[in-house]
Image (cartoon, rainbow, N blue to C red; front, side, top):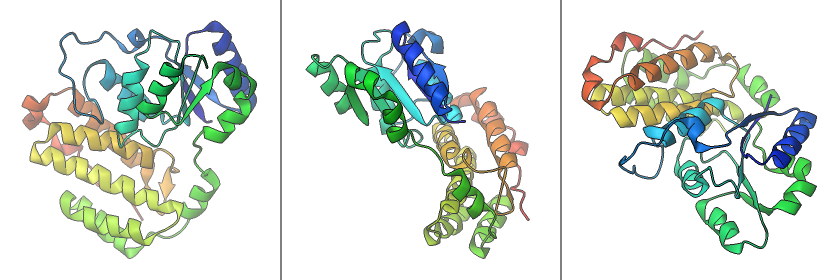
Length: 276
């Protein structure tokens, strides 16, 4: 079922959004205040644009990438959400920039509406327009995977080039597997190509762990989710569900460590990709 994540606390709008979402067959998760993601870290160093891995913003990225929502909604009047910062961060990250962001606010507050557009929002609407056209707007802007097309593509065979890349992955040659999987992705113009993007990003995450690049590994694991999550459990003979679980175990193990303790990472968590 498609998911909307709404950064909305106004009872009038939460009720209407919930009603429309239910009618369209969407689930809704609410984040009404930033405090729901935990306390902000005082004096925390501001990270570069892109995926944030620490503090409240890191928890935001974890929640969004794990949920893979079809649409994010921001109420620009919700002062309990740092929407300027969060929209800009989400739209500058390779892990989340494809997720559409819709904002609504008072039409007379031109500065606020402009700030939301400048931050990267895909749609910025007056409250009246949002209220009147909510069902059509959700259907227009929500990013929904074509599950039928993915299922049809995943029923096909695994090409030899992808098999070569997976074989290198399973030999622990995570850097070398990238080229074969990327070429398989380039040669496939259909939706099944997303499989190869997910495989190679997990491989690069493992390579970054071997290099001692803690931040790089976590970033790649966050990015891989957008490619792997929409796929069925098995795609072209590849056990995608198993790979997702493996990648999640690696991510959980990493987050229990920090960069200084990366040498303690248990490389037995690097499991081979199962395919037929």
